[in-house]
Length: 342
Image 1 (spheres, rainbow, N blue to C red):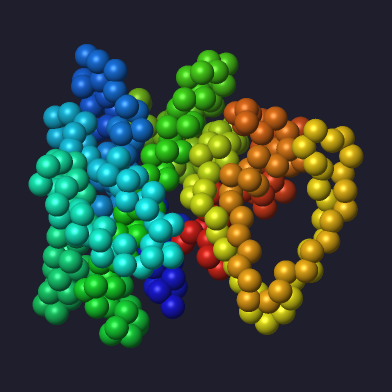
Image 2 (image 1 turned 135 degrees about the vertical axis):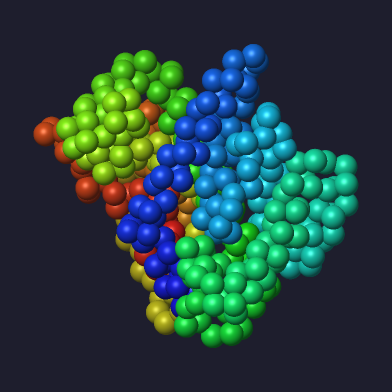
């Protein structure tokens, strides 16, 4: 129900309207790296995190947090968010820890600027943004351009529009829209810098996209539009390979068959052996079956030399995208629980 309401906001047409904002923030980040990053080494993942946080906060709330605009790389809440996410598996088994997490955040915010930024953004400011969206709706203002505004104007039942429920949705979007993207960008950047030949090949293709944009009236030197970039097969392959090696959410994704037993047939090759064995298991109904994208993305039968960054594996002999590999890419999960917008 909530997925349908949010899915509309992350449709291709809706997200394409965000292109000017993303382009502007990307340029601001590049300018910041050229100025601030010139004097000393810096953490590239943190830099990308400022960018992704500003993008998703502006999209959700109507105004971004302004992290790129600050003088340096601090404050940010990447490490603090990681620290919170590392505890998630405990919350599954000890729900009380959820409340303890908030209590600890209230304490640590007083001794850490970064934690205070995280706490204010997710615990203090988020409900205020929800309340503002509700006030705008009550006053007849059009706020359908933000996620909160869109949800409030949807046909969801009132309990699904409560401040607490909407705040939780906002926190989930922040967590999903910041670190997964910034880490994927970091992985791609690292491998391209580590393999100059790949970077040169990608650069040449992007330059070609710039030329194509000029043919349709773009300004000289302007960053290519997404419409021009998405036609570039090698760029497509680089992004897919980056997603494969950054994993998305690498924790297990569990499913439960409630109405039937599952019969599993397969083959298994013991470590150190050259011979595979046939295996068969019966998984009783009601039992959770979990898997991780990290395991699938390193299946050597699908992705040979899986720990290497090889964009060419996503292209066939004609240089076109190998769609059959998409079924093994789980960075956005699959099925009814896949990331919205996919």
